[in-house]
Structures are given as C-alpha cells and as structure tokens.
Length: 318
View 1 (cartoon, rainbow, N blue to C red):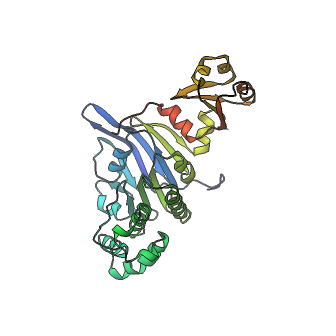
View 2 (cartoon, rainbow, N blue to C red):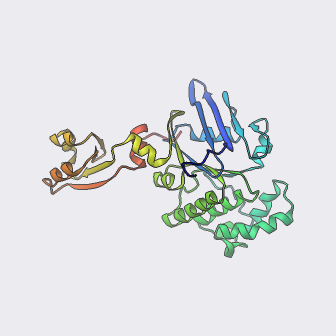
C-alpha cells in the first residue's frame, strides 16, 4: 500500500482480548487488526501468549474479556465464538504440527479436507491440480506421506489450508523444522499469497522470516503488546543503527573497559559483547588494537529488537 493510499478496513480484528489461567494472565488486553492483503507477524518468547491468542482466534479457547471479529468485504461482521463455524469456513489454518492423513495420497488429502467444507467433489478436483502446482508437488499427487520430505509435508499442509479459498490464513510457526532450502521455498509461496491479496496472521521464532514476510509485526511478551509496526520502522525507533559484536578470549573484559564509552550501550550474551552505536568508526578503529579478538560490524536487525524488548534469558517452553 502506498503512503497516499487510504488504509483498508480490517478483515480481522482482536479487541481487548484477555485470558487468565488461575492467577496467571496469559493474554492481557491485547488488540490488533489485519487488513486485506496484509501479513501480520506475531513474535515473542516462549510463554508470551502467542499460542493462546491463536487458540482464541480459532474459538478453541474462550476469552475472559474482549472479542475476535471477522469482517470480510461485503459481508456482515462475524464474532468468535458465536459465529465460529461461519468464520472457520473462511479461514485456512497451518498449525505447528502436521495433521495430514498418512493413509491418503497428496491429492486425496486435499479432496477429503475439501469435503469438510461441504465443497462438491467436482469443485475440489478442479482445484487440486492448481494447489499441487502451488505447493510444487504435482509430481507427488499420488504419493503417500511416507514418501514425502518434511518440507513437502509442510507445503502440502499449506495447500490443504487453501482448498476452501480462504480470506485469512492463520499460520502457527509454519517453517519449524525445515532446512534452509525448504524454508526459502515456503517463504516464496507465502509471499505469492500476499501478492494475490490473501491476509495472513503468522507466528514465528525466526526473525529473518518475520522481517522478510511481514508487513507489520506485533511483539508480544507476558501477554502484552510491547510494540507494533513495520519491521524496519520498529528497528529504527527502538535501536541504534549499528552493532559491533566482539567475541574470543578476553572479549568479556571489554564490556567494562573504556571502549564502553564509544557505544550508546553494551550487552553481554554468552561469550559475546554487543556494542550498540550510532557511529561505529571510532569503536572499530579502537578494536583494531585487539588482534586476537573477532569482530562483526553489522546493521541492527530484528533479532536485536526482539532481545532488547524481551531480554536474553532463555525461557522454558510454556
């Protein structure tokens, strides 16, 4: 969308969503919206509330407060869970774990899944070749799941989610467990969907994936929205533009050395010191006096933003 374009009315919105389990608030007054043809990414550490939010969006968990609204163009507004069946009929879902039927071939998985939406067999069979082509699985139409790689299964899951021609796709960590080649092919397919006007809600732990695919990002932690906006805008608003990483024997001592004055701030993670700065030339020149240390000078990225907002401490799976 160009800067002069009027913003589109949202196709999907979450308003003041909250969920508690016992004394723990898992999602805390969360609000966001997705426009037609937009990919919104939700990122956050384990336990941030991402999966619970997705479950409430799908009507699998009931919010304690707030509402989930689906507003496709030309149709009345639908609310979850009251209009759950009508909403799900227009959604495509790819969960973290494959739920494909191992007894069926690729084409049969698509056919059977399409029947769940009440689609006539003739309509589904007409769509199957296009869906298999989209998933780069035309040559595997009659193959059983045992003959597919992990990347092929994930692409088949995506094709299956498209069998009902949904208005909105909910993708929960869709590339987890894939090798780099399979991830890049999946990214290309997801970018194609956005170009075709599909809306996507994406959760991911891969920062390069979030930056590559998402028009906007929502950073979530402890169930609360930390920030929201376009990836590069969030980086510019919250971080110094340049980062110098220093690692090797003796690197940690630099965190408290006079070099600290040459950076806006420093952080230590493991055996690496991170210097965040607006201008790195003086710092890199000073580091030349430490030839045994290894340095990496790079622009600030989305991973830096994630770690600044949510911390570097490892969290157990929630």
